[in-house]
Amino acid sequence: MESNGVIYYVTAPGIDVDADLLMKFNRAIQFKELDLPVAEGEIEQATLEGKYLVTRAGKWTWITIIINQKPSRFTREAIHSFSIKFENRYGREIKHLYTKFKGDISVFKRASDTRESVDGIIDEVFHLSLTLPHKLGFPTGKKLDKTTKKIWQLAEDLAHKTRGKILLGNLFSEARKEFGYDNKDITDSIWALIEANYLMPIPLDKL
Image 1 (cartoon, one colour):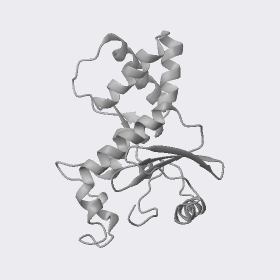
Image 2 (image 1 turned 30 degrees about the vertical axis):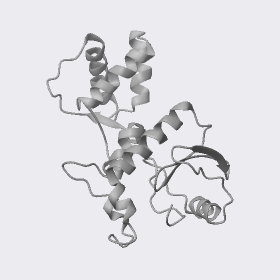
Image 3 (image 1 turned 180 degrees about the vertical axis):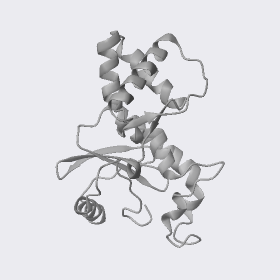
């Protein structure tokens, strides 16, 4: 809020930065063409260049999601969660960004043993890495239930057919077709495999 402009942004994996859109967004903020929320915790919705904007006001920052589709309840819940986590973990850096830290936003990228980087918090809340292809990970020995075990075996079969790259959407579709499980059971099982490192995202620079 102090700079009244965009100081930090992240795009989903595989999505190029739209510099023109960011410039127009920044201009809309500077010239008060967007209705930004005022009270802490308040959320406002707007459109810009055919995109949907959802903005939440924190104590010191505005957090905005720019998406192609109409925002859902999850969008609002996610932005609320991220805004609180970000300001709780980086409150000191935000308050002193233009004094002690001299405007250096790299302070948000530094992870430590006790604190994730901002990008880490983003993935923790929005799960952007789920859009990346995944590969077979290193089973930790964690016991899997019957449903999850079957989906893991299916993932192994898919990996052999696709040179090691597994799209989670394809795994979901194949599991539903192969086993006829409930959508929630499949989703929960895939998530369990990811949490236990049975499936791991492939970084863009490794694709």
